[in-house]
Length: 132
Image (cartoon, rainbow, N blue to C red; front, side, top):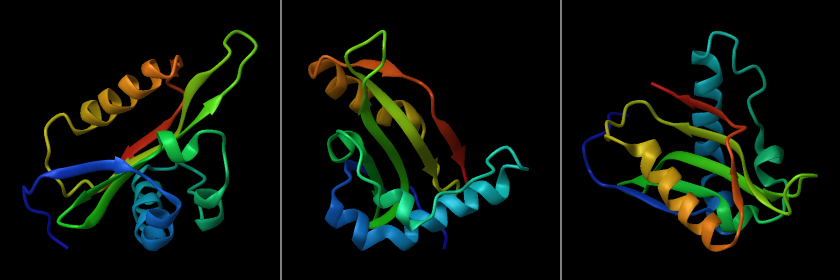
């Protein structure tokens, strides 16, 4: 599948969108693992995408281009000993065939604004990979 330069939509990942696109998100995830030369050792399976986490449906995003998923960001709210709440990133991956300047920055900006509005701090403990 060749990707064009159409606009990328960043939207909240809902349970409905997850179920509708679970196969494609797993494909992006597994492509990322295959391209990581062993640094991305444990690609998620469907059940890990479906795991319920605090705030997951508020803070996770799906990226699409021409109605086709091209990436995702899975995040949740996490309580720590030092902070009442932080935005914890679990996974982020993009289809590397899309060429969109500042795509990751756009996703982070969207999430940072929402997290800040909710009084959360930002946690950068994520695995990020861009597939080809």
